[in-house]
Length: 323
Image (cartoon, rainbow, N blue to C red; front, side):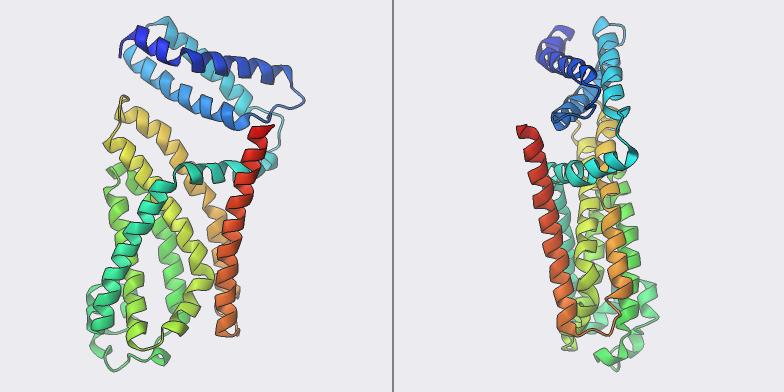
């Protein structure tokens, strides 16, 4: 892209951000205004354009101008009078929801990859439980010996609480690795999502074969639904980063990595409270002496709660944008 074309295509965004900076600086009593989402979008866009300009037009005035513009915008966006708690509130109540809605395709792809692996292993183990010996990692073999699998197939011989704890620990590790796998062009992320689905599918197939699925899922779903949602978000973050590295478009891969790594990190950070909530449920509700229907009810409430959170966050974003 030639310098003249670059300026013509993007000048309107620079002027718009410049005007918003002036407006925000004049209203110091309200440093974060109703147009903060639009401001943030412009800031992200122009930051990426600055990286492009530094690469292809390092000695041009436009690069100096963009550098100054981004610096002023950064000051307005991050050096506000809001407290850290207020910034956290804005992030989790609006910005995180916005990121999820923007990147929903990547999250759905992570879900599909997980499901494909899960279904494949489920049918393999449901038909022949011995296949589980070739699927599960070593730590599960301490609970279910492959040599004695046929003799110990009944649910009362399986430590369900241990299984639940192992799955939770595994899922947190998977979330971090799935995100970090983005730097491998998403290849590691794809592998992790499929393999994690294979593990859970194999366990589900084992209990299905033993006619004990109802009991098995009672140990899993109270905390597992939102835990898996968090994993899909982390996986989507890794896939997003990997895709932008694989298909960088008009920008250099290093530029795309810098820009989308930040968005992916925000997605990963947004999952932390979800994992905390899942851990609390796993520690106090999953092993509690509650009826199985009650545990399923807890799982349903967590799903409804997450959907309500998304709707509420989206409503807040629409309300702010309409002001």
